[in-house]
Image (cartoon, rainbow, N blue to C red):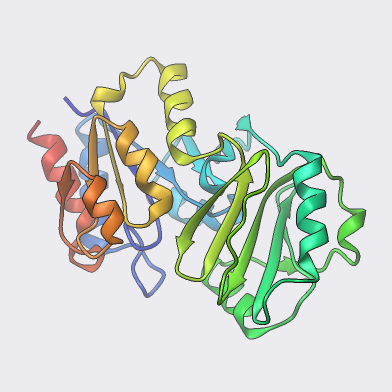
Length: 257
Protein backbone atom coordinates (compact mmCIF):
# COMPACT_ATOMS: atom_id res chain seq x y z
CA UNK A 1 0.00 0.00 0.00
CA UNK A 2 1.34 3.44 -0.95
CA UNK A 3 0.48 6.03 1.70
CA UNK A 4 2.66 8.90 0.46
CA UNK A 5 3.56 10.22 -2.96
CA UNK A 6 6.64 12.44 -2.87
CA UNK A 7 7.06 14.50 -6.02
CA UNK A 8 9.67 16.82 -7.44
CA UNK A 9 8.32 19.98 -9.07
CA UNK A 10 10.17 21.20 -12.17
CA UNK A 11 10.21 18.66 -14.97
CA UNK A 12 8.10 16.25 -12.94
CA UNK A 13 4.88 17.87 -11.73
CA UNK A 14 5.53 21.28 -13.29
CA UNK A 15 5.93 21.63 -17.06
CA UNK A 16 7.93 23.98 -19.24
CA UNK A 17 5.16 26.59 -18.95
CA UNK A 18 5.93 26.71 -15.18
CA UNK A 19 2.45 25.44 -14.33
CA UNK A 20 1.41 22.10 -12.90
CA UNK A 21 0.48 19.59 -15.57
CA UNK A 22 -3.34 19.45 -15.21
CA UNK A 23 -3.59 15.65 -15.42
CA UNK A 24 -0.97 15.26 -12.69
CA UNK A 25 -2.52 17.92 -10.48
CA UNK A 26 -5.97 16.37 -10.72
CA UNK A 27 -4.58 12.88 -10.07
CA UNK A 28 -2.85 14.05 -6.88
CA UNK A 29 -6.13 15.52 -5.71
CA UNK A 30 -7.77 12.12 -6.29
CA UNK A 31 -4.98 10.42 -4.34
CA UNK A 32 -5.52 12.75 -1.40
CA UNK A 33 -9.29 12.23 -1.56
CA UNK A 34 -8.62 8.50 -1.32
CA UNK A 35 -6.69 9.04 1.92
CA UNK A 36 -3.14 9.41 0.59
CA UNK A 37 -0.68 12.16 1.46
CA UNK A 38 1.37 14.25 -0.96
CA UNK A 39 4.78 15.74 -0.18
CA UNK A 40 6.60 18.21 -2.43
CA UNK A 41 10.38 17.73 -2.62
CA UNK A 42 12.13 20.47 -4.55
CA UNK A 43 15.24 22.57 -4.85
CA UNK A 44 13.03 25.65 -4.62
CA UNK A 45 12.80 27.88 -1.55
CA UNK A 46 9.67 28.62 0.51
CA UNK A 47 8.40 31.56 -1.56
CA UNK A 48 8.83 29.65 -4.79
CA UNK A 49 7.24 26.37 -3.65
CA UNK A 50 4.26 27.82 -1.77
CA UNK A 51 1.98 28.52 -4.80
CA UNK A 52 2.10 24.84 -5.82
CA UNK A 53 1.54 23.73 -2.23
CA UNK A 54 -1.53 25.95 -2.04
CA UNK A 55 -2.86 24.91 -5.45
CA UNK A 56 -2.85 21.29 -4.29
CA UNK A 57 -4.42 22.23 -0.95
CA UNK A 58 -1.61 20.57 1.00
CA UNK A 59 -1.45 20.85 4.77
CA UNK A 60 1.82 19.18 5.71
CA UNK A 61 5.56 19.38 5.18
CA UNK A 62 7.52 20.29 2.07
CA UNK A 63 11.14 19.28 1.45
CA UNK A 64 12.90 22.40 0.16
CA UNK A 65 16.38 23.50 -0.95
CA UNK A 66 17.03 19.96 -2.23
CA UNK A 67 16.71 18.60 1.28
CA UNK A 68 18.54 21.25 3.29
CA UNK A 69 15.30 22.41 4.91
CA UNK A 70 11.91 20.83 5.59
CA UNK A 71 9.13 23.33 6.31
CA UNK A 72 5.42 23.24 7.05
CA UNK A 73 4.41 25.79 4.43
CA UNK A 74 1.02 26.25 6.09
CA UNK A 75 2.39 27.43 9.43
CA UNK A 76 5.92 28.38 8.40
CA UNK A 77 7.38 26.05 11.04
CA UNK A 78 10.88 24.81 10.15
CA UNK A 79 10.87 21.08 10.86
CA UNK A 80 14.46 20.31 9.83
CA UNK A 81 17.29 22.59 8.78
CA UNK A 82 20.91 22.24 7.71
CA UNK A 83 23.49 24.90 6.85
CA UNK A 84 26.80 24.99 5.02
CA UNK A 85 29.74 24.76 7.42
CA UNK A 86 31.34 28.21 7.87
CA UNK A 87 34.61 26.92 6.42
CA UNK A 88 32.83 25.66 3.30
CA UNK A 89 31.16 29.04 2.81
CA UNK A 90 34.50 30.81 3.15
CA UNK A 91 35.97 28.44 0.55
CA UNK A 92 33.14 29.30 -1.82
CA UNK A 93 33.63 33.02 -1.23
CA UNK A 94 37.28 32.68 -2.19
CA UNK A 95 36.24 30.95 -5.43
CA UNK A 96 33.62 33.48 -6.53
CA UNK A 97 36.16 35.76 -8.19
CA UNK A 98 37.64 32.88 -10.19
CA UNK A 99 34.47 31.33 -11.58
CA UNK A 100 34.39 30.71 -15.34
CA UNK A 101 32.97 33.55 -17.38
CA UNK A 102 29.21 33.12 -17.62
CA UNK A 103 28.82 31.39 -14.24
CA UNK A 104 27.20 33.32 -11.39
CA UNK A 105 26.61 32.50 -7.70
CA UNK A 106 23.33 32.70 -5.78
CA UNK A 107 23.29 32.18 -2.01
CA UNK A 108 20.31 31.37 0.20
CA UNK A 109 20.24 32.72 3.73
CA UNK A 110 17.38 33.44 6.13
CA UNK A 111 14.73 32.58 3.56
CA UNK A 112 16.16 35.01 0.98
CA UNK A 113 17.90 34.46 -2.35
CA UNK A 114 20.94 36.68 -2.81
CA UNK A 115 23.01 37.62 -5.86
CA UNK A 116 25.39 40.45 -6.76
CA UNK A 117 25.14 40.14 -10.55
CA UNK A 118 22.30 41.50 -12.70
CA UNK A 119 22.58 39.29 -15.78
CA UNK A 120 20.08 37.50 -18.07
CA UNK A 121 20.94 34.06 -16.62
CA UNK A 122 19.97 35.12 -13.11
CA UNK A 123 16.97 37.14 -14.22
CA UNK A 124 15.69 34.06 -16.05
CA UNK A 125 16.25 31.90 -12.96
CA UNK A 126 14.36 34.38 -10.74
CA UNK A 127 11.49 34.58 -13.22
CA UNK A 128 11.27 30.81 -13.47
CA UNK A 129 11.20 30.35 -9.71
CA UNK A 130 8.96 33.36 -9.03
CA UNK A 131 11.41 34.98 -6.63
CA UNK A 132 13.31 38.24 -6.20
CA UNK A 133 17.10 38.16 -5.95
CA UNK A 134 18.36 40.66 -3.38
CA UNK A 135 21.82 42.19 -3.67
CA UNK A 136 23.62 41.49 -0.37
CA UNK A 137 26.12 44.27 -1.04
CA UNK A 138 29.18 42.42 0.21
CA UNK A 139 29.13 38.61 0.35
CA UNK A 140 31.37 38.69 3.40
CA UNK A 141 28.66 40.47 5.41
CA UNK A 142 26.47 37.34 5.42
CA UNK A 143 26.55 35.23 8.61
CA UNK A 144 28.83 32.33 7.59
CA UNK A 145 27.01 29.72 9.68
CA UNK A 146 23.55 30.50 8.30
CA UNK A 147 23.88 29.79 4.58
CA UNK A 148 21.34 27.14 3.56
CA UNK A 149 22.81 26.48 0.12
CA UNK A 150 24.71 28.06 -2.73
CA UNK A 151 23.94 27.72 -6.43
CA UNK A 152 26.19 28.28 -9.40
CA UNK A 153 24.17 29.13 -12.50
CA UNK A 154 25.56 29.17 -16.02
CA UNK A 155 27.87 27.26 -18.33
CA UNK A 156 30.44 25.74 -18.10
CA UNK A 157 29.90 24.73 -14.48
CA UNK A 158 33.03 23.88 -12.50
CA UNK A 159 33.70 20.62 -10.69
CA UNK A 160 33.71 21.22 -6.93
CA UNK A 161 34.86 19.12 -3.98
CA UNK A 162 34.52 21.16 -0.80
CA UNK A 163 34.73 19.40 2.59
CA UNK A 164 31.43 19.41 4.45
CA UNK A 165 29.32 19.77 1.31
CA UNK A 166 27.59 17.74 -1.36
CA UNK A 167 26.96 18.96 -4.91
CA UNK A 168 24.05 18.07 -7.19
CA UNK A 169 22.91 19.05 -10.67
CA UNK A 170 19.28 20.13 -10.50
CA UNK A 171 19.30 21.38 -14.10
CA UNK A 172 21.87 21.34 -16.89
CA UNK A 173 23.03 24.85 -15.90
CA UNK A 174 22.39 24.65 -12.13
CA UNK A 175 25.03 23.31 -9.74
CA UNK A 176 23.87 23.28 -6.11
CA UNK A 177 26.27 23.20 -3.16
CA UNK A 178 24.50 21.82 -0.10
CA UNK A 179 25.47 20.91 3.45
CA UNK A 180 26.84 17.37 3.63
CA UNK A 181 23.96 14.96 4.22
CA UNK A 182 21.37 17.46 3.01
CA UNK A 183 19.70 15.61 0.15
CA UNK A 184 16.10 14.88 -0.75
CA UNK A 185 16.64 11.28 0.30
CA UNK A 186 17.95 12.08 3.78
CA UNK A 187 15.19 14.63 4.29
CA UNK A 188 12.60 12.05 3.22
CA UNK A 189 13.97 9.43 5.62
CA UNK A 190 13.79 11.91 8.50
CA UNK A 191 10.28 13.09 7.61
CA UNK A 192 8.93 9.56 7.20
CA UNK A 193 10.45 8.47 10.52
CA UNK A 194 8.91 11.45 12.32
CA UNK A 195 5.47 10.44 10.99
CA UNK A 196 5.90 6.70 11.50
CA UNK A 197 5.47 5.97 7.78
CA UNK A 198 7.53 3.01 6.49
CA UNK A 199 9.62 3.85 3.45
CA UNK A 200 8.09 0.82 1.72
CA UNK A 201 4.77 2.69 1.73
CA UNK A 202 6.17 5.73 -0.10
CA UNK A 203 6.42 6.38 -3.84
CA UNK A 204 8.84 9.09 -4.98
CA UNK A 205 9.13 10.54 -8.48
CA UNK A 206 11.69 12.83 -10.11
CA UNK A 207 13.52 13.68 -13.31
CA UNK A 208 17.01 15.04 -12.54
CA UNK A 209 20.12 13.66 -10.77
CA UNK A 210 19.26 15.52 -7.56
CA UNK A 211 16.25 13.15 -7.29
CA UNK A 212 18.21 9.89 -7.48
CA UNK A 213 18.75 9.30 -3.77
CA UNK A 214 15.11 10.21 -3.09
CA UNK A 215 13.76 7.63 -5.51
CA UNK A 216 16.28 5.10 -4.18
CA UNK A 217 15.03 5.79 -0.63
CA UNK A 218 11.34 5.25 -1.39
CA UNK A 219 9.74 1.85 -1.59
CA UNK A 220 8.66 2.69 -5.13
CA UNK A 221 11.16 4.85 -7.01
CA UNK A 222 9.80 6.37 -10.21
CA UNK A 223 11.52 8.26 -13.02
CA UNK A 224 9.86 10.66 -15.43
CA UNK A 225 10.02 9.28 -18.95
CA UNK A 226 11.82 12.28 -20.43
CA UNK A 227 14.06 12.74 -17.39
CA UNK A 228 17.82 12.35 -17.11
CA UNK A 229 19.15 8.92 -18.20
CA UNK A 230 20.80 8.36 -14.81
CA UNK A 231 17.46 8.81 -13.07
CA UNK A 232 15.72 6.39 -15.41
CA UNK A 233 18.47 3.83 -14.80
CA UNK A 234 18.10 4.15 -11.02
CA UNK A 235 14.31 3.90 -10.88
CA UNK A 236 12.11 0.90 -10.19
CA UNK A 237 9.61 2.17 -12.76
CA UNK A 238 9.77 4.66 -15.63
CA UNK A 239 6.49 6.43 -16.42
CA UNK A 240 5.42 8.88 -19.11
CA UNK A 241 6.86 12.29 -19.90
CA UNK A 242 6.19 15.23 -17.60
CA UNK A 243 3.84 16.92 -20.08
CA UNK A 244 1.93 13.66 -20.57
CA UNK A 245 1.11 13.36 -16.87
CA UNK A 246 4.06 11.51 -15.32
CA UNK A 247 2.74 12.07 -11.79
CA UNK A 248 -0.73 10.93 -12.84
CA UNK A 249 0.92 7.64 -13.85
CA UNK A 250 2.42 7.40 -10.35
CA UNK A 251 -1.01 7.94 -8.81
CA UNK A 252 -2.41 5.09 -10.88
CA UNK A 253 0.40 2.83 -9.67
CA UNK A 254 -0.21 3.89 -6.08
CA UNK A 255 -3.96 3.40 -6.15
CA UNK A 256 -3.58 -0.05 -7.69
CA UNK A 257 -0.96 -1.21 -5.17
